[in-house]
Length: 221
Image (cartoon, rainbow, N blue to C red; front, side):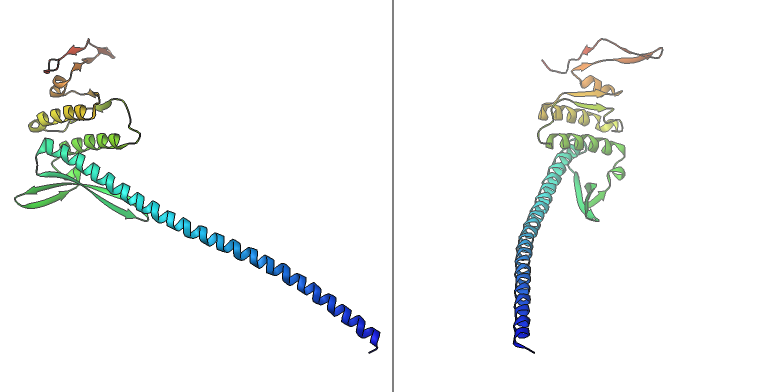
């Protein structure tokens, strides 16, 4: 091979080498950018994982606080009406990653602890009371606090005569404790007689007739 051809071949080789170096430099820069992006994403992933754990712990703590608050409020209502042997428990569970709760009415008789679902505990009266107490507890636990009266439709309609008196006193206590007006629709004379103001509504020829309100003397000034 002549000298000129060698020089030409060497020149082509040098050009190819420079091209390859340029390609290498581009790839190295791209690799550096990808690595920096990967590290940034990894740091973000770690941060998000820490946030997820924190939120999970916060949610667990909030659920536990709400559970204890509801248990305390409803237990007090149960004991107010049915006596000190009753208490309310919430069993927090998780199914398929979704939290759930089971409600139980717990009683103690002769040293034995009996744990029942509300529908199996002393009939509908317990369910009526639980429904009322849970609604009040949920309303009072909301932030910001929900304003306005509590409206009840036939409260305590399954509460037996033996417990109507304490049930009436419970409603008065809830009204006083939480400073809320309670508006009721009821056929129970014990409840109407406990009200500060009562309207008599009767059906006449297909129309509801509202009689003038009766101011009731309940010892209130």
